[in-house]
Amino acid sequence: MCDVKKILKEVWGYEQFRPLQRDVIDSVCAGSDTIALMPTGGGKSLTYQIPTLATDGICIVITPLIALMKDQVDSLRKKGILAAGIHSGMSLQKIESTLNNCLFGGYKFLYIAPERIPSDIFSLTFAEMNVSLIAVDEAHCISEWGHDFRPAYLNISKLREIKPEVPILALTASATPNVIKEITQNLKLNSPKILRMSFRRDNISYIVRQTEDKQSMLRHILQNVNGSAIVYTRTRNRCETLSEWLNQENINALPYHGGMDNFTRSQHQDSWINGKTRVIVATNAFGMGIDKPDVRIVIHYDLCESLEAYYQEAGRAGRDGKPAYAVIITSNADKTTVKRRIQNEFPDINTIKKIYDDIFVYLKIPYDEGLGLKKQFDLNNFSKRYKYFPLTVINAIKILEINGYLKLTEPLDNPTRIIFEINREELYEYNFKNTMLNRIISAILRNYPGVFTEYKAINEVQLADYLATDVKTISELLLTLSRKHIIRYIPSSHTQMLVLTEDRIPIPHLFISSQSFLIRRETSMQRALMVVEYAEQTSKCRSLILQNYFGDNSCEGCGKCDICREKRTKPVEYTDSMIVKIISESPRDIKQLVKLLKTDSDFAVERIQQLTKQGVIKQDECGIITLAKHN
Image (cartoon, rainbow, N blue to C red; front, side, top):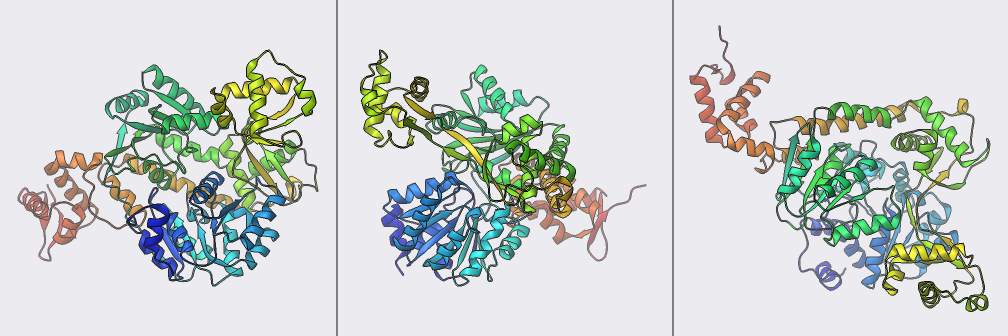
């Protein structure tokens, strides 16, 4: 066993571990199954990377996000650590080559999506590997009670069956006690050690602003809080309209959502990260894997689908430890909007069956065919053509996946690809009047050997830097060459694959478990209404609500949220009203009452005595305090 602190210093250049990191590493190194709850930005990846480097063997990392998989692999390789990833965007030949390298090539990390586990090629190779650890990122995805249930995560327990002796580390930024229980059961963990960081973020002030003019409130907040900002909305259209309006109000903003092409999203993201753009207006497609430490404010223009999602998104503020704000802008209509959204997002069983049939029509697959096919699936195009809400389609597909019919992969960023249509001799005969065409052909020939014989992935950003121009110009030049039939040009795309796990069957033969539908709809409604309750309540510290929700039984208020600030400004009135409220719900003795008030005990006793003198409350011979009855 190597010195883990020495690895931390030599590989990552850090002198000390962050809170909880060392505890998790020690548990993993001792061979214990471990569940680690570490807030976003808490350094989860080091808790499996360092133990793996300290032992023989390879670590299998299960992650739901291909983009994060690629980032982690690239980061490890830059440090000279052999790491690889396999996902649905790779050819079978490349997957086989990668697995063989992991089996024989001294690789230390293999990142996979959970959908990969049932395949014969992976399971057979995994059985032969010298595996030191299985790390499950975003482990809450395995729970139907979690906010992001992903049925493919249920495959992970098969790894435990193949190698029962290998410890499992389950990592998540947010999990309630119910979710932790399901993680333990579904991963088949053996008496796991549960380690958690406090969910308290002392530098973040949680604020809720009630208004019927959300735009004006948004402008007011951004004009009064300096620094980088994220504004989260629920719809792509609102991302566009809000960012355009903010620019009209002289607040520098850009939109970000999944409907944009890859390069536009990347440019907007980079502009914001580099400080050229102050505000990014985004759907929840934005944020995962982005580590910008100096975000001063995160604003939710629309309510999140759960407190888990809210905590993660709000937690992108103030990662540098400096004061930051997490603000929800809410209106009287939000509760109705939330209920209607859940109803729209969760179709009834007949609609699910109709979506199933429309998918096969869209993909042009006849009855009794389709088993094993993998088809590119444009969710937005399908939804528009058949007049569905995209989230309705997503939820229908998830329910169809639970019932074993099909599954949708995570969106893949496919790079631009080109191949020359003419040979080298024919190319030399061209003399373009447009010098940029000559320059880009020269740049392609220098940087992409073999482009005459096979498609090559082209990095348009690198080409733009090489030719001292912008990405838009590069795309236009490639399109021009394509129109002249000099190259075949496949632009970059952001696509998903639909994997068919059964042949197409007639609707009357399609069986959808009512439980799979009802559980998802009910739990989603419960989680959404908890966010409404969080925003509407006016009595309890907002930080405490979040902490308690995740099983952190702290009782000390943050002193920073809008509720705590209100308490400080009106301590007597607030404490008196809370005493009356608590007693009206249930009689208490003085110790219980003081504890529930969560304020200075001497002050609480003073207010109880004063209310007794005023005849508002009374105490019987057993010390039980009740409301006084007035004639």
